[in-house]
Image (cartoon, rainbow, N blue to C red; front, side):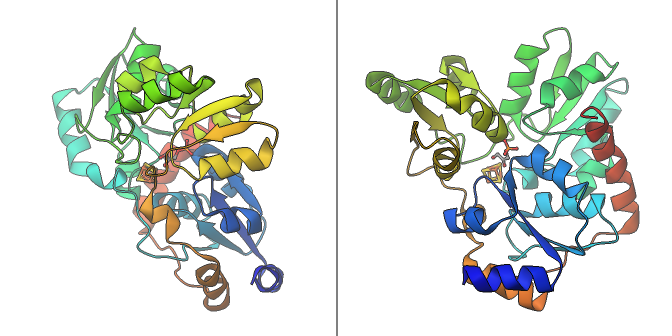
Length: 296
Ligand code: 13P
Ligand code: SF4
């Protein structure tokens, strides 16, 4: 299966991009594996004719927005992000009417329509930097309220307005103080994603995006990894001499929909192609490119 996928990829002039939460066999066959920011930056410099995105809708949409003339394929059309679905453009427009001087920062885990009304996009890797880059003292921030709380703690001089007030990811809010106590009893260090609730963030040793976790993992022998469980496979591949403990129940079901047979079929049929209205793409691109400019 893997050989067929590699042959098809060459024949079709395709690049396979995969998120850190994808199944191990998908990570193994991908050309590039990373966090949302790394994937967006990689997507911005693709030379191949076609991008096959092993991830969820908002990630493939971001790749399409950055490459309007390329074919971008999401192997499982319905692979979504329940967090992204919690924010609508109308919510942002209403918040803007209530806070006319506020900047609008939209997390990359959002629809293209929401990005189109944002001033700038951020990921969990650069949210603090993005918020600091704006002149505004008030920042409308959505949809993740836990990431918003993390930014508020890091940038106390600004007022962060979470929209919606309780936007969250079910995978990360599944971590509890019981998990912290268990980890403390075993020793080692806790690294958590900023989508975890503030009570977990406050007790963790390190808070990082999944890409940040890859970079920081070399610092310790034993890590309790408070994010989606496949991150453990990614970290072990890159740091085989370290130990990574994950929570079995921390599963993003949408990230598990892409399997090797489905990836093979996507390369063969070139389905499902990501398409978006031109106006939405143009407006969302401005907000995404503002973020990318901070990394040049
Ligand atoms: P990262 O950008 O840190 O990989 O996070 C993406 C995500 O969906 C977290 O749940
Ligand atoms: Fe969305 Fe949560 Fe899955 Fe990340 S882990 S893609 S935020 S549902």
